[in-house]
Image 1 (cartoon, rainbow, N blue to C red):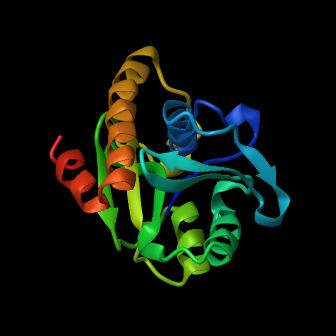
Image 2 (cartoon, one colour):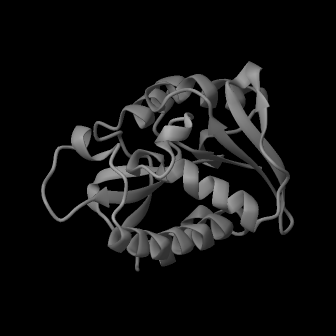
Length: 188
């Protein structure tokens, strides 16, 4: 089983912001994979759905904590389902990657991303997978100033292409292996 986690902030006014791209993509993947609607699980502080993607079991998670406390949801879920960190895949924004680009990485440190730092602390390891979706604009703007900005219409078109590639790669990571997904995803 794979645990797919979309990092972001739960409140409605954060929808469509750069910081919520991970959450938005995991929501879109639930629809694409025709999994049941997310249900809130207070014991895990998260919205959860589970089912099969082709023949493989997957659990999708949207932490109901704010970004900086994502580990408060991820840690208990991983322990409850006895999921190895290597079967955990985070999907999140990355201000160090230009908009329109994305990377799948394994075992990397947080590079200052507070949500990822929280998950690392909760799991006590960096040995998990991360879809890092670029949110940086053309100008060099500090991450604190860019993460809560909405996308321009042109940026939205660019983002749709990255989202489609990411949905394909998430499916490959679940039905085949994350390594196979990485080979094609990082090459684009």
